[in-house]
Length: 219
Image (tube, rainbow, N blue to C red; front, side):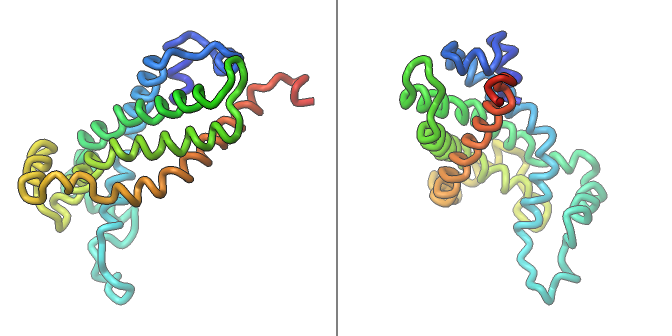
């Protein structure tokens, strides 16, 4: 999605950019934001179900009395209790997290790759791994505050505290727990983000190079 958005914004192709015609950084950021906005509507119901299931604490012997017995049962219960709109509970917080953070996700990646790559050449494996890892850590550092709010809103009305909306959740959490509440889980997110995103970007770049290589180059 980000690649297609970037091609549209800059009217260029990945192969041309790889040959040294780098896209401007504002276009990289914008393309990332567009990508984040497009995926929010798709992932919001799935993310909601994931959070609800992860916050169940019943043991193995209590599964029959669990509020949600499976992802499908969770989805059905949400629709039954809150209607179809219930599947998008917390979507505002999700959008506030993903839209700007997807832009930030690709921006440090591009910047680091350019710093570690000679002009006119493609990034090396080392550059891609380092850039991908840094991009993941930077993104989660910015995303964690809104990720905390998103999770709290998604649990609202399902055994968790009820919030009137995103702003009310932010103000209430800040007032009761202080500024540190917005950075819960940041260390674990960062430790996970570096290796995961390093491998993700490397896989993406390698596959893209293979698929966009000329037939002669593949032979």
